[in-house]
Image (tube, rainbow, N blue to C red; front, side, top):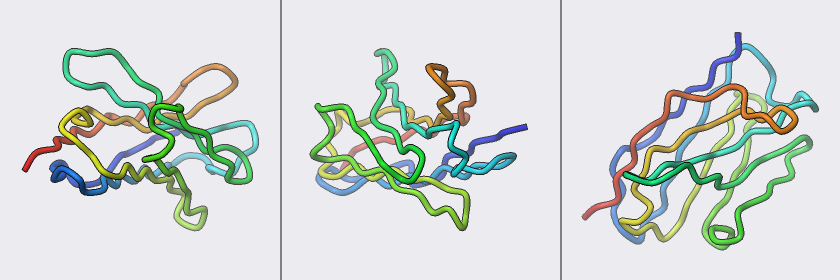
Length: 118
């Protein structure tokens, strides 16, 4: 059974960088059939896909966040990470790490609340 678990600070100050890690168990993140995404949900709003890292480590981002976002992986630890720079209170959200299989997001982490506040 594949499991994903987010970890990272729950509170980040404005202008700082938000860093989250997703630890994957039950399967290798380098398997070519899968990709690994970060999705967030601000309070009272819908889900927003942020970006993905795919086979061989190529990454893609939503254009509105591209200049501030980086997704990377550590294959030795079976983890992938999100960095979002220059955060503002508008980046306050529940952040999810997700496995992508074809056009499906089939496994999700439980989500982690990140609040941007001084």
